[in-house]
Image (cartoon, rainbow, N blue to C red):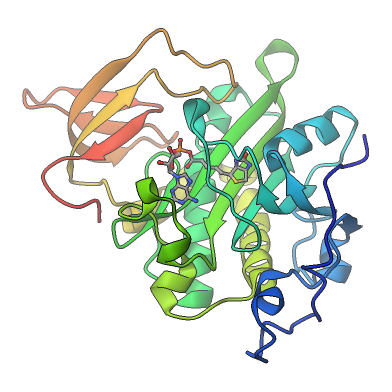
Length: 316
Ligand code: BT5
C-alpha cells in the first residue's frame, strides 16, 4: 500500500531553521524540514551515515500508529531498514494494550523494519538493545543522563523519556522474518503539554535541557546509532551489549518487583492469561538478555519480560 497519512503545511519549515534558533516559532523547531507525505532517502535527504537503517524514510503528518503503518508496508515488501516517522499519532501504542501519548510536532514517533532471521527468543532482547542504543546516542549528542529501565524504557532523572515497542511478524518454523521496532521519544514537550497522568512520570529532552531541540537532528542521531548497534547485535547478539547495559541500567542492584505475563511477547501473541510477580534484587542480566532476579532465599529467576517496579526509592 502507499503509506497513508494526512499532510499539512505546518511542518514545511526551512531546513535547519530550528538549528540556529532563528526565532521562527514552533513550526521551525517542530518540522522535520520536509513536507510530510514523502518517502525520503536517509543517506541523501537526511544525510544519515547509516546504510541500512533509514534507507527509506516515510515521513507522515498524522497516523494512527507508526508501528501499524510499517506492519502494512512490510506485508507489501518494504525493504529492511525502512522507517516510518510521523509528526503525530492518534492511537500510539504501548505494550499490553496501553497507549502512547504522541502529540503533533513535539516528539519522535517512529518505527524501523528489521529482518533478523533469528529465533524469537534471540530477538526479544532487541527491545533493551534499542533502548541502550537510543540512550547512548542521546548521552553522546545531547549530554543528557539517559538510562535504560529493563525491558523497554528510556529514562532520565527517574522519569520516562521514551519507550520501545517491539512487534514481530513471525515466519515459518519459528524464524522471525520481520521485526517492527517502535520508538517513542519525547523531544520538545514541555511539562504543560503532558496530560495529568504523565506530569509526575514523564520527561523530555526539552525539559532536561531547558531548550528546544530540532527533531531532525535527534532523528539522525538515533537512526545512525541504531544502524551501528543493529550490526553489533546481528554479529554478537545481546552479549555485545551486556557491558553497556550494566553501565546504563536503573534496576541493577535494586529491589524490584516484576509483573510478567501481562506483557505482549516478542512474537506479538501476548500471554494475558498468565500473570505472576517475581520479587527480589536485580542481580544481573543473562548473555541472552533475561533479567536475573534473586529472592530472599537466594534463589534466582531469569525473567524475559514484564513491568518492573523499583521498590523503596526512585527509579534512578
Ligand atoms: C512503551 O510501552 O513504553 C512503548 C512505547 C512505544 C511508542 C512508540 S511511538 C512509535 C511506535 N508506534 C506506536 O504505536 N508505538 C511505538 P509501555 O512500557 O507499555 O509504556 C506505556 C505507558 O507509558 C503508558 O501506559 C503511560 O503510562 C506512559 N506513557 C504514555 N505516553 C507517554 C509519553 N509520551 N511519555 C512518557 N510516558 C508515556
